[in-house]
Length: 345
Length: 291
Image 1 (cartoon, each protein chain N blue to C red):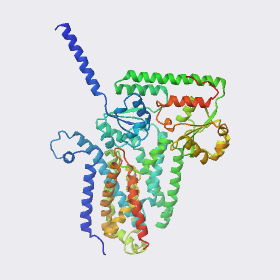
Image 2 (cartoon, each protein chain N blue to C red):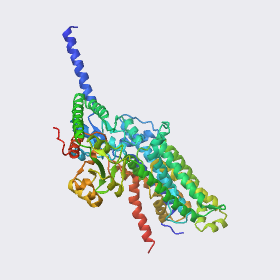
Image 3 (spheres, chains in turn brown, yellow):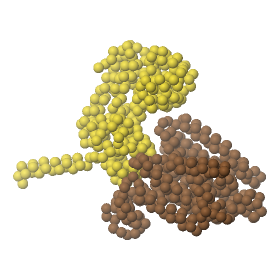
């Protein structure tokens, strides 16, 4: 197959891009730190025993603010892009995005319940209260996706077309329920809800990070094992069946991994649009549709893209911050249009 | 040791401790609350503010300071880049992980209540006074404020003894379009009641209202707070977008008044008594205005 870039240079290039993004994400921020301090603090963070005099501020900003934020960006970007590949493979449609199976709208509904109804839960234990929003968003995403999957099943077969339509119907239903909560909300909760729907890596803390990192690593290791099966699925369901692929099992795994990955990402950082749609496309343009390359390459590209978007989000309006969803949509929407229009010629 | 030497040392000791106390007072302030920024300015410390949030719109000069964004969506590094000695804000300020990061960086985060009542304001001003090192002035400002409000209460009581309270609705909108009506449990409701009006809306919070319901309530006075326009422009936009208003008693009597929407957020601010006074005068045109 002819591709623009061969796999090896592609992976080398994407890894380099990722490393650059990580370095910039650690080195740049509203607080300007001398390059040397950043370097020394970074070395100390990874355990190199060097003299730490006068590095308190640099270490604090790197260790407590920028490093968790960078890791969060890597995980969110990676897992969103990976889920995008999984969904485009499942629906055999390059315009599919993780929202199609209802995970985003479900998470949004969960978040609305937590934000607007949060005070009604009153008296939550302290260890649980701060994570109510994340937990509700995660469970909402998982719940609606499970429902969509369940609706698509009949006689032990999963109809992708029915799932797609059920996803649209449940998305609308969840959307209007969120609308109802919006109506009930007061001014302050309304703004919280709005900002949550735009996503942010702001305020990343390790406590929120570990569950997502675990999910991301697990999903990133698991899905590439299904690369050949996804390639076979591109030919069509019955063709894949004849090739000896357990298509029903594959669909279940794809939906489950997407719900888990996107649910965890959304729970940690709110809604971040377009990464799941655009990144797989970008990689496909460069490297072709082979899932053995597409899956891991999308993780790297998604991670790097989200870090670059976050740099814009944190620097453009400093000392204030822009929601990252605005940046990704600004980059993503024109690109999406370009893809649509290009297909016409 | 002779007594005079002791005295001198004692005095010197006092002076040193006093100087060091002044040194410890926060000099670079970041404020994430509109009413708080206003109070800091009213207490004469506007020059200490190095950054404010998007709700800090008064006094006008604050708009030239670096903006730290919306009070619920603060960024730790952004605020730290202003090298603040203290961050002040209401309990609306957040998100909590960001506040924790700011605290970890050694910047004290001082929380204030946004409740709109006098005891809260007394606490807020005393707290600000301590942070500014001028508690006497803060107490004095509070006392004057309290007196103003009390005088106003007297005036309202007198007016209410002679006239019935006018039925009022408060409309909150953007350039006149689709105004929200202020119901119970809002700062607007508190304001209307303080000024001697009777809020006809019985729902809670700010809600959109059907035209029919609006016509049915037929308020004597209409107060509007427009977030994007002011003065005649706002009034025209409101009437143009909502033609039904022209048929209300308030419109026929020409009793449609304006209120600054920034008064409705963040607790009791320094500009409140003047606005209340004006509202009272508008609610009771026949009653003699107090000095």
